[in-house]
Amino acid sequence: MRIEYSLTPELRAKLKEPLGTLIRGSFKETVKILEDTVKREKPPRIISVGDTVSRNLAHSQVFAQLMIVDNLAMRKSIQPISAEAERSIHVKNPQGTITDEAIGAIRESLKHNEHAKIVVDGEEDLLALVAILHAPENSFVVYGQPRKGIVVVRVTPEKKSEIAEILKGMENVRKAK
Image (spheres, helix red, strand yellow):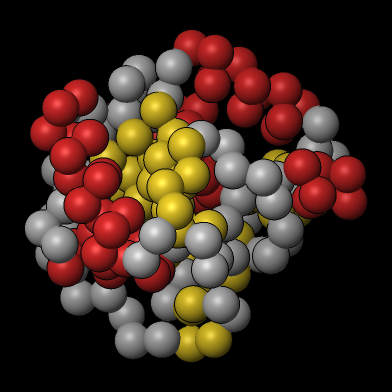
């Protein structure tokens, strides 16, 4: 495992803001809006990042083709998600970093038209950036905004450029572990 990117204090503050559209409300309200949006826009892929949002989507029959989870919610251990996946990959990704192992798993999972789950030993939050960067155009990357709702990022060339700039701003540390 090699750390490719580390979060800087400046970017930590910036990334607290939603990267896409914040849908405010209860789980029931936000998922209903997402369901309607998915039916209308028919994204080629739905990628969920985070245990709570992944579990909520699965319970509502909105199936993400890729779920990225760490078996934690608000930094507390939870039951692993029981949603079906044809492929399950385990990666290491320490808090505040993005590893080459995690990048590779996301890229590989997005190449296949199957349901996959990446289980992270560490933290999955920053992996939303990698998912946006590598997802097919018009895909949705969905993650939770604690105590507010869910964020839906529509993958566009402009959004990919924005994410590439964010990643350039992260310290590129290249340490062997």
